[in-house]
Figure 1 (cartoon, rainbow, N blue to C red):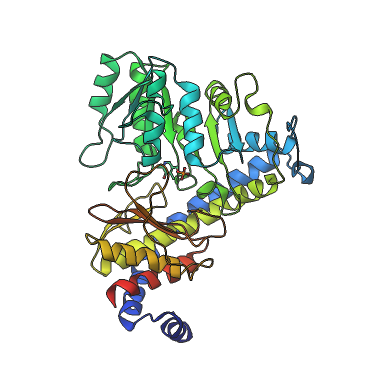
Figure 2 (figure 1 turned 90 degrees about the vertical axis):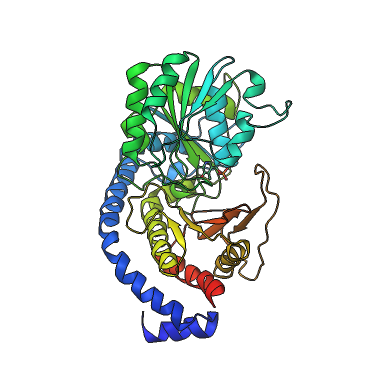
Amino acid sequence: MIKEMKEFLASKYNITNKVLELYEKTIEDVKGEFDLLDDIREFNQAKVLNALQEERISESHFTNSSGYGYGDIGRDSLDKVYARVFNCESALVRPHFVNGTHALGAALFGNLRPNDTMLSVCGKPYDTLHGIIGINEESGMGSLKEFGVKYKQLELTSYGKPNLESIKKALLEDDSIRLVHIQRSTGYGWRKALVIEDIKTIIDCVRQIRSNTICFVDNCYGEFIDILEPTDVGADLVAGSLIKNIGGGIAPTGGYIAGTKECVEKASYRLTVPGIGGECGSTFGVIRSMYQGLFLAPHITIEALKGAIFCSRLMELAGFEVLPKFNDKRSDIIQAIKFNNKEKLIQFCKGIQVGSPIDSFVECEPWDMPGYTDQVIMAAGAFIQGSSIELSADAPIREPYIAYLQGGLTFDHAKIGILIALSRIIN
Ligand SMILES: *Cc1c(COP(=O)(O)O)cnc(C)c1O
Protein backbone atom coordinates (compact mmCIF):
# COMPACT_ATOMS: atom_id res chain seq x y z
CA MET A 1 0.00 0.00 0.00
CA ILE A 2 1.44 3.38 -0.94
CA LYS A 3 2.19 5.98 1.72
CA GLU A 4 -0.50 8.35 0.43
CA MET A 5 -3.12 5.64 0.81
CA LYS A 6 -2.06 4.92 4.38
CA GLU A 7 -2.26 8.60 5.25
CA PHE A 8 -5.63 8.86 3.55
CA LEU A 9 -7.04 5.89 5.47
CA ALA A 10 -5.64 7.20 8.74
CA SER A 11 -7.02 10.70 8.30
CA LYS A 12 -10.42 9.84 6.80
CA TYR A 13 -11.23 6.63 8.66
CA ASN A 14 -9.02 6.54 11.75
CA ILE A 15 -7.31 3.39 10.61
CA THR A 16 -4.41 2.78 12.93
CA ASN A 17 -0.89 1.61 12.24
CA LYS A 18 -1.66 -1.66 13.98
CA VAL A 19 -4.43 -2.40 11.45
CA LEU A 20 -2.23 -1.30 8.56
CA GLU A 21 0.52 -3.67 9.71
CA LEU A 22 -1.98 -6.53 9.73
CA TYR A 23 -3.01 -5.43 6.25
CA GLU A 24 0.53 -5.72 4.88
CA LYS A 25 0.98 -9.18 6.35
CA THR A 26 -2.42 -10.29 5.04
CA ILE A 27 -1.72 -9.15 1.48
CA GLU A 28 1.57 -11.06 1.56
CA ASP A 29 -0.15 -14.24 2.78
CA VAL A 30 -3.11 -14.26 0.40
CA LYS A 31 -1.27 -13.48 -2.85
CA GLY A 32 -0.64 -17.10 -3.67
CA GLU A 33 -4.34 -17.94 -3.35
CA PHE A 34 -5.37 -15.66 -6.18
CA ASP A 35 -3.78 -17.40 -9.19
CA LEU A 36 -6.28 -20.25 -9.19
CA LEU A 37 -9.13 -17.75 -8.96
CA ASP A 38 -7.95 -16.05 -12.14
CA ASP A 39 -8.19 -19.37 -13.99
CA ILE A 40 -11.74 -19.95 -12.76
CA ARG A 41 -12.83 -16.43 -13.70
CA GLU A 42 -11.34 -16.73 -17.16
CA PHE A 43 -13.10 -20.00 -17.88
CA ASN A 44 -16.48 -18.80 -16.63
CA GLN A 45 -16.17 -15.60 -18.64
CA ALA A 46 -15.64 -17.72 -21.75
CA LYS A 47 -18.67 -19.85 -20.87
CA VAL A 48 -20.94 -16.82 -20.51
CA LEU A 49 -19.58 -15.09 -23.60
CA ASN A 50 -20.10 -18.18 -25.69
CA ALA A 51 -23.66 -18.67 -24.40
CA LEU A 52 -24.57 -15.10 -25.41
CA GLN A 53 -23.06 -15.66 -28.85
CA GLU A 54 -24.73 -19.02 -29.40
CA GLU A 55 -28.11 -17.46 -28.66
CA ARG A 56 -27.26 -14.59 -31.04
CA ILE A 57 -28.19 -11.94 -28.48
CA SER A 58 -28.60 -8.49 -29.99
CA GLU A 59 -29.99 -5.07 -29.14
CA SER A 60 -33.46 -6.28 -30.09
CA HIS A 61 -33.44 -8.63 -27.09
CA PHE A 62 -33.35 -5.73 -24.67
CA THR A 63 -37.07 -5.31 -25.02
CA ASN A 64 -39.51 -3.63 -22.73
CA SER A 65 -42.63 -5.73 -22.92
CA SER A 66 -45.91 -4.88 -21.24
CA GLY A 67 -49.18 -6.56 -20.34
CA TYR A 68 -49.07 -10.33 -20.61
CA GLY A 69 -45.57 -10.24 -22.00
CA TYR A 70 -46.31 -12.92 -24.62
CA GLY A 71 -43.34 -13.74 -26.81
CA ASP A 72 -40.91 -11.47 -24.95
CA ILE A 73 -37.78 -12.60 -26.80
CA GLY A 74 -35.42 -10.94 -24.36
CA ARG A 75 -36.89 -12.97 -21.52
CA ASP A 76 -37.16 -16.23 -23.45
CA SER A 77 -33.61 -15.97 -24.81
CA LEU A 78 -32.19 -15.15 -21.39
CA ASP A 79 -33.65 -18.45 -20.18
CA LYS A 80 -31.76 -20.19 -23.00
CA VAL A 81 -28.52 -18.36 -22.20
CA TYR A 82 -28.76 -19.47 -18.57
CA ALA A 83 -29.53 -23.04 -19.65
CA ARG A 84 -26.29 -23.02 -21.67
CA VAL A 85 -24.27 -21.57 -18.81
CA PHE A 86 -25.66 -24.24 -16.47
CA ASN A 87 -25.24 -26.92 -19.10
CA CYS A 88 -28.82 -28.10 -18.63
CA GLU A 89 -32.09 -28.37 -20.58
CA SER A 90 -34.00 -25.41 -19.32
CA ALA A 91 -33.99 -22.30 -17.14
CA LEU A 92 -36.39 -19.70 -15.80
CA VAL A 93 -34.85 -16.30 -15.04
CA ARG A 94 -37.27 -13.68 -13.87
CA PRO A 95 -37.46 -10.27 -12.23
CA HIS A 96 -40.77 -11.52 -10.81
CA PHE A 97 -38.99 -13.68 -8.28
CA VAL A 98 -38.86 -11.27 -5.37
CA ASN A 99 -35.73 -12.93 -3.96
CA GLY A 100 -33.83 -16.20 -3.81
CA THR A 101 -36.25 -17.67 -1.29
CA HIS A 102 -39.11 -17.14 -3.75
CA ALA A 103 -37.26 -18.99 -6.53
CA LEU A 104 -36.38 -21.85 -4.15
CA GLY A 105 -40.00 -21.95 -2.96
CA ALA A 106 -41.37 -22.14 -6.51
CA ALA A 107 -38.96 -24.97 -7.29
CA LEU A 108 -40.03 -26.92 -4.19
CA PHE A 109 -43.79 -26.28 -4.42
CA GLY A 110 -43.72 -27.03 -8.13
CA ASN A 111 -42.00 -30.37 -7.79
CA LEU A 112 -43.37 -31.85 -4.57
CA ARG A 113 -46.83 -33.44 -4.20
CA PRO A 114 -48.90 -34.53 -1.20
CA ASN A 115 -47.35 -37.54 0.58
CA ASP A 116 -43.95 -36.94 -1.01
CA THR A 117 -41.04 -36.50 1.35
CA MET A 118 -38.38 -33.83 1.03
CA LEU A 119 -35.05 -34.95 2.47
CA SER A 120 -32.51 -32.31 3.46
CA VAL A 121 -29.04 -33.85 3.54
CA CYS A 122 -27.15 -30.80 4.83
CA GLY A 123 -28.85 -30.32 8.15
CA LYS A 124 -31.31 -27.53 8.72
CA PRO A 125 -31.83 -25.47 5.54
CA TYR A 126 -31.33 -21.71 5.36
CA ASP A 127 -33.58 -19.79 7.75
CA THR A 128 -36.02 -18.40 5.16
CA LEU A 129 -36.82 -21.92 3.96
CA HIS A 130 -38.27 -22.94 7.31
CA GLY A 131 -41.54 -21.20 6.52
CA ILE A 132 -41.72 -22.86 3.09
CA ILE A 133 -41.14 -26.33 4.52
CA GLY A 134 -43.17 -25.80 7.69
CA ILE A 135 -40.38 -26.38 10.21
CA ASN A 136 -41.62 -25.43 13.71
CA GLU A 137 -44.61 -23.43 12.65
CA GLU A 138 -48.26 -23.35 13.54
CA SER A 139 -50.66 -24.58 10.86
CA GLY A 140 -52.33 -22.21 8.45
CA MET A 141 -49.19 -20.73 6.97
CA GLY A 142 -49.50 -22.37 3.54
CA SER A 143 -46.29 -24.35 3.95
CA LEU A 144 -45.42 -27.59 2.15
CA LYS A 145 -46.28 -29.36 5.39
CA GLU A 146 -49.82 -28.01 5.24
CA PHE A 147 -50.12 -29.43 1.74
CA GLY A 148 -49.12 -32.87 3.02
CA VAL A 149 -45.46 -32.84 2.00
CA LYS A 150 -43.33 -34.55 4.64
CA TYR A 151 -39.88 -33.44 5.66
CA LYS A 152 -36.83 -35.28 6.91
CA GLN A 153 -33.37 -34.03 7.69
CA LEU A 154 -29.90 -35.58 7.87
CA GLU A 155 -26.90 -33.86 9.39
CA LEU A 156 -23.52 -33.45 7.76
CA THR A 157 -20.65 -35.36 9.35
CA SER A 158 -18.52 -33.60 11.95
CA TYR A 159 -16.14 -32.72 9.09
CA GLY A 160 -18.97 -30.91 7.29
CA LYS A 161 -19.17 -33.58 4.60
CA PRO A 162 -22.30 -35.37 3.39
CA ASN A 163 -23.09 -38.52 5.35
CA LEU A 164 -23.48 -40.96 2.45
CA GLU A 165 -24.30 -43.97 4.62
CA SER A 166 -27.21 -42.21 6.26
CA ILE A 167 -28.43 -40.90 2.89
CA LYS A 168 -28.44 -44.44 1.47
CA LYS A 169 -30.20 -45.78 4.53
CA ALA A 170 -32.87 -43.06 4.42
CA LEU A 171 -33.59 -43.70 0.74
CA LEU A 172 -33.79 -47.46 1.21
CA GLU A 173 -36.14 -47.12 4.19
CA ASP A 174 -38.49 -44.55 2.73
CA ASP A 175 -39.66 -44.71 -0.85
CA SER A 176 -41.72 -41.53 -0.47
CA ILE A 177 -38.52 -39.46 -0.70
CA ARG A 178 -39.15 -37.51 -3.87
CA LEU A 179 -36.61 -34.72 -3.53
CA VAL A 180 -33.18 -34.46 -1.95
CA HIS A 181 -32.35 -30.93 -0.85
CA ILE A 182 -28.69 -29.94 -0.98
CA GLN A 183 -27.58 -26.55 0.31
CA ARG A 184 -24.28 -25.56 -1.22
CA SER A 185 -23.58 -22.50 0.87
CA THR A 186 -22.94 -22.09 4.56
CA GLY A 187 -26.10 -20.13 5.29
CA TYR A 188 -26.14 -19.01 8.91
CA GLY A 189 -24.16 -22.04 10.01
CA TRP A 190 -20.58 -22.72 10.96
CA ARG A 191 -19.44 -25.02 8.20
CA LYS A 192 -17.66 -24.85 4.89
CA ALA A 193 -19.71 -24.68 1.73
CA LEU A 194 -20.12 -27.97 -0.10
CA VAL A 195 -17.72 -28.10 -3.03
CA ILE A 196 -18.94 -29.39 -6.40
CA GLU A 197 -17.17 -32.69 -5.73
CA ASP A 198 -19.24 -33.15 -2.51
CA ILE A 199 -22.42 -32.35 -4.40
CA LYS A 200 -21.50 -34.90 -7.07
CA THR A 201 -20.92 -37.54 -4.40
CA ILE A 202 -24.39 -36.94 -2.97
CA ILE A 203 -26.03 -37.07 -6.39
CA ASP A 204 -24.18 -40.25 -7.40
CA CYS A 205 -25.18 -41.83 -4.11
CA VAL A 206 -28.87 -40.92 -4.60
CA ARG A 207 -28.81 -42.19 -8.20
CA GLN A 208 -27.36 -45.54 -7.14
CA ILE A 209 -30.49 -46.16 -5.13
CA ARG A 210 -33.20 -44.37 -7.05
CA SER A 211 -33.19 -42.72 -10.44
CA ASN A 212 -36.38 -40.71 -10.08
CA THR A 213 -35.54 -38.78 -6.93
CA ILE A 214 -34.99 -35.10 -7.73
CA CYS A 215 -31.59 -33.79 -6.68
CA PHE A 216 -32.20 -30.13 -5.86
CA VAL A 217 -29.43 -27.67 -5.01
CA ASP A 218 -29.85 -24.33 -3.25
CA ASN A 219 -27.09 -22.66 -5.27
CA CYS A 220 -27.23 -19.25 -3.55
CA TYR A 221 -23.77 -17.62 -3.39
CA GLY A 222 -22.24 -20.53 -5.30
CA GLU A 223 -22.39 -19.46 -8.93
CA PHE A 224 -19.06 -19.02 -10.74
CA ILE A 225 -16.94 -20.04 -7.74
CA ASP A 226 -15.92 -23.17 -9.61
CA ILE A 227 -15.67 -24.00 -13.30
CA LEU A 228 -18.56 -26.42 -12.81
CA GLU A 229 -22.07 -25.82 -11.49
CA PRO A 230 -24.19 -28.45 -9.71
CA THR A 231 -26.06 -29.08 -12.97
CA ASP A 232 -22.74 -30.12 -14.56
CA VAL A 233 -22.54 -32.99 -12.09
CA GLY A 234 -26.11 -34.24 -12.39
CA ALA A 235 -28.34 -31.95 -10.30
CA ASP A 236 -31.90 -31.96 -11.66
CA LEU A 237 -32.73 -28.54 -10.38
CA VAL A 238 -30.90 -25.51 -8.96
CA ALA A 239 -32.13 -22.11 -7.86
CA GLY A 240 -30.66 -18.85 -6.65
CA SER A 241 -30.89 -15.11 -6.36
CA LEU A 242 -29.95 -12.42 -8.90
CA ILE A 243 -28.85 -9.99 -6.21
CA LYS A 244 -26.06 -12.38 -5.33
CA ASN A 245 -23.27 -13.70 -7.59
CA ILE A 246 -25.04 -14.29 -10.87
CA GLY A 247 -26.68 -10.87 -11.18
CA GLY A 248 -23.19 -9.39 -11.27
CA GLY A 249 -24.28 -6.47 -9.10
CA ILE A 250 -26.22 -5.11 -12.07
CA ALA A 251 -29.48 -7.08 -12.14
CA PRO A 252 -31.89 -4.95 -10.07
CA THR A 253 -33.84 -7.88 -8.61
CA GLY A 254 -34.96 -11.43 -9.40
CA GLY A 255 -34.15 -15.09 -9.18
CA TYR A 256 -33.45 -18.07 -11.40
CA ILE A 257 -34.20 -21.75 -11.61
CA ALA A 258 -32.31 -24.12 -13.93
CA GLY A 259 -32.37 -27.84 -14.57
CA THR A 260 -34.27 -30.50 -16.45
CA LYS A 261 -37.11 -29.42 -18.72
CA GLU A 262 -39.67 -31.20 -16.58
CA CYS A 263 -38.50 -29.85 -13.23
CA VAL A 264 -38.18 -26.27 -14.49
CA GLU A 265 -41.59 -26.39 -16.16
CA LYS A 266 -43.23 -27.65 -12.98
CA ALA A 267 -41.50 -24.88 -11.02
CA SER A 268 -42.74 -22.30 -13.54
CA TYR A 269 -46.33 -23.23 -12.67
CA ARG A 270 -45.65 -21.95 -9.18
CA LEU A 271 -44.13 -18.71 -10.40
CA THR A 272 -47.36 -18.08 -12.33
CA VAL A 273 -50.04 -20.78 -12.61
CA PRO A 274 -50.49 -24.21 -14.25
CA GLY A 275 -51.01 -23.84 -17.98
CA ILE A 276 -49.14 -20.53 -18.19
CA GLY A 277 -45.78 -21.10 -16.55
CA GLY A 278 -42.95 -19.09 -18.05
CA GLU A 279 -44.85 -17.93 -21.12
CA CYS A 280 -46.25 -14.81 -19.50
CA GLY A 281 -44.60 -12.04 -17.56
CA SER A 282 -43.65 -8.65 -18.92
CA THR A 283 -40.19 -7.54 -18.01
CA PHE A 284 -40.48 -3.80 -17.28
CA GLY A 285 -37.33 -2.92 -19.20
CA VAL A 286 -34.96 -4.67 -16.79
CA ILE A 287 -33.82 -7.42 -19.13
CA ARG A 288 -30.75 -5.58 -20.40
CA SER A 289 -29.33 -5.36 -16.89
CA MET A 290 -29.99 -9.04 -16.34
CA TYR A 291 -27.91 -9.86 -19.43
CA GLN A 292 -25.19 -7.39 -18.55
CA GLY A 293 -25.09 -8.60 -14.97
CA LEU A 294 -24.63 -12.18 -16.14
CA PHE A 295 -21.83 -11.06 -18.41
CA LEU A 296 -20.03 -9.33 -15.52
CA ALA A 297 -20.80 -12.00 -12.93
CA PRO A 298 -17.72 -14.23 -13.43
CA HIS A 299 -15.50 -11.20 -12.77
CA ILE A 300 -17.50 -9.68 -9.93
CA THR A 301 -17.85 -13.01 -8.15
CA ILE A 302 -14.07 -13.44 -8.07
CA GLU A 303 -13.63 -9.87 -6.78
CA ALA A 304 -15.98 -10.78 -3.93
CA LEU A 305 -14.12 -14.03 -3.35
CA LYS A 306 -10.83 -12.17 -3.06
CA GLY A 307 -12.48 -9.93 -0.48
CA ALA A 308 -13.57 -12.97 1.51
CA ILE A 309 -10.09 -14.48 1.44
CA PHE A 310 -8.56 -11.17 2.51
CA CYS A 311 -11.07 -10.84 5.34
CA SER A 312 -10.40 -14.38 6.50
CA ARG A 313 -6.66 -13.85 6.84
CA LEU A 314 -6.91 -10.35 8.29
CA MET A 315 -9.41 -11.33 10.98
CA GLU A 316 -7.46 -14.47 11.80
CA LEU A 317 -4.29 -12.42 12.27
CA ALA A 318 -6.30 -10.06 14.46
CA GLY A 319 -7.11 -13.02 16.70
CA PHE A 320 -10.60 -14.11 15.63
CA GLU A 321 -11.76 -17.57 14.63
CA VAL A 322 -12.71 -17.67 10.95
CA LEU A 323 -14.31 -20.13 8.55
CA PRO A 324 -13.18 -20.89 5.90
CA LYS A 325 -9.47 -20.21 6.42
CA PHE A 326 -7.80 -18.08 3.76
CA ASN A 327 -6.21 -21.09 2.09
CA ASP A 328 -9.22 -23.45 2.18
CA LYS A 329 -10.96 -24.45 -1.04
CA ARG A 330 -14.14 -22.39 -1.30
CA SER A 331 -17.54 -22.97 -2.82
CA ASP A 332 -19.35 -19.76 -1.93
CA ILE A 333 -18.44 -16.10 -1.33
CA ILE A 334 -19.24 -16.13 2.38
CA GLN A 335 -16.73 -15.47 5.12
CA ALA A 336 -17.81 -16.33 8.64
CA ILE A 337 -16.10 -14.65 11.60
CA LYS A 338 -16.82 -15.81 15.12
CA PHE A 339 -16.77 -12.99 17.68
CA ASN A 340 -18.07 -14.75 20.80
CA ASN A 341 -19.17 -11.26 21.78
CA LYS A 342 -22.35 -9.44 20.88
CA GLU A 343 -20.93 -5.94 20.97
CA LYS A 344 -17.94 -6.74 18.74
CA LEU A 345 -20.23 -8.43 16.25
CA ILE A 346 -22.50 -5.40 16.07
CA GLN A 347 -19.56 -2.99 15.83
CA PHE A 348 -18.02 -4.99 12.99
CA CYS A 349 -21.27 -4.87 11.01
CA LYS A 350 -21.65 -1.17 11.71
CA GLY A 351 -18.11 -0.69 10.40
CA ILE A 352 -18.99 -2.36 7.12
CA GLN A 353 -21.94 0.02 6.84
CA VAL A 354 -19.66 3.02 7.45
CA GLY A 355 -17.41 1.69 4.69
CA SER A 356 -20.28 1.50 2.17
CA PRO A 357 -20.73 3.76 -0.85
CA ILE A 358 -24.44 4.27 -0.09
CA ASP A 359 -26.02 5.05 3.29
CA SER A 360 -22.58 5.17 4.91
CA PHE A 361 -23.96 7.64 7.46
CA VAL A 362 -26.68 5.24 8.62
CA GLU A 363 -26.36 3.25 11.85
CA CYS A 364 -27.55 -0.27 11.15
CA GLU A 365 -29.29 -1.98 14.07
CA PRO A 366 -30.56 -5.52 14.75
CA TRP A 367 -34.23 -5.94 13.70
CA ASP A 368 -36.96 -8.54 13.27
CA MET A 369 -36.52 -9.36 9.60
CA PRO A 370 -39.35 -11.20 7.81
CA GLY A 371 -38.52 -14.89 7.48
CA TYR A 372 -35.99 -15.07 10.33
CA THR A 373 -36.54 -16.22 13.94
CA ASP A 374 -33.74 -14.34 15.68
CA GLN A 375 -33.14 -10.63 15.24
CA VAL A 376 -30.76 -9.97 12.37
CA ILE A 377 -28.31 -7.13 11.84
CA MET A 378 -27.58 -6.31 8.22
CA ALA A 379 -24.97 -3.92 6.94
CA ALA A 380 -25.60 -3.36 3.28
CA GLY A 381 -24.95 0.13 2.01
CA ALA A 382 -25.60 -1.09 -1.48
CA PHE A 383 -26.69 0.40 -4.79
CA ILE A 384 -29.33 -2.31 -4.92
CA GLN A 385 -31.24 -2.76 -1.70
CA GLY A 386 -30.04 -5.77 0.25
CA SER A 387 -27.73 -6.87 -2.55
CA SER A 388 -25.18 -9.18 -1.01
CA ILE A 389 -22.85 -9.41 -3.99
CA GLU A 390 -22.11 -5.88 -2.86
CA LEU A 391 -20.02 -5.58 0.29
CA SER A 392 -22.27 -6.57 3.15
CA ALA A 393 -22.20 -8.23 6.53
CA ASP A 394 -25.06 -9.78 8.38
CA ALA A 395 -25.62 -11.81 11.48
CA PRO A 396 -28.45 -13.33 13.45
CA ILE A 397 -28.12 -12.03 17.00
CA ARG A 398 -27.46 -15.33 18.72
CA GLU A 399 -24.50 -17.11 20.29
CA PRO A 400 -21.68 -17.55 19.40
CA TYR A 401 -22.15 -14.27 17.56
CA ILE A 402 -20.97 -15.07 14.07
CA ALA A 403 -20.90 -12.43 11.33
CA TYR A 404 -21.22 -13.43 7.69
CA LEU A 405 -19.41 -11.15 5.32
CA GLN A 406 -19.81 -11.28 1.59
CA GLY A 407 -19.45 -9.31 -1.55
CA GLY A 408 -17.63 -6.32 -2.73
CA LEU A 409 -18.15 -5.31 -6.34
CA THR A 410 -14.45 -4.52 -6.36
CA PHE A 411 -11.73 -6.13 -4.28
CA ASP A 412 -10.42 -2.66 -3.43
CA HIS A 413 -13.71 -1.66 -1.88
CA ALA A 414 -13.88 -4.91 0.09
CA LYS A 415 -10.40 -4.27 1.51
CA ILE A 416 -11.24 -0.72 2.61
CA GLY A 417 -14.58 -1.69 4.15
CA ILE A 418 -13.03 -4.56 6.08
CA LEU A 419 -10.20 -2.37 7.39
CA ILE A 420 -12.74 0.14 8.65
CA ALA A 421 -14.75 -2.62 10.34
CA LEU A 422 -11.69 -4.12 12.02
CA SER A 423 -10.57 -0.70 13.25
CA ARG A 424 -13.79 -0.31 15.17
CA ILE A 425 -13.18 -3.40 17.25
CA ILE A 426 -9.47 -3.33 17.94
CA ASN A 427 -8.96 0.38 18.55
C1 LIG B 1 -29.39 -15.91 0.41
C2 LIG B 1 -29.79 -17.32 0.55
C3 LIG B 1 -31.09 -17.74 0.25
C4 LIG B 1 -32.17 -16.83 -0.23
O1 LIG B 1 -32.21 -15.64 0.40
P1 LIG B 1 -32.95 -14.37 -0.23
O2 LIG B 1 -32.57 -13.31 0.72
O3 LIG B 1 -34.39 -14.69 -0.21
O4 LIG B 1 -32.46 -14.16 -1.60
C5 LIG B 1 -31.37 -19.08 0.37
N1 LIG B 1 -30.43 -19.96 0.74
C6 LIG B 1 -29.17 -19.59 1.03
C7 LIG B 1 -28.18 -20.62 1.42
C8 LIG B 1 -28.81 -18.26 0.92
O5 LIG B 1 -27.56 -17.90 1.18
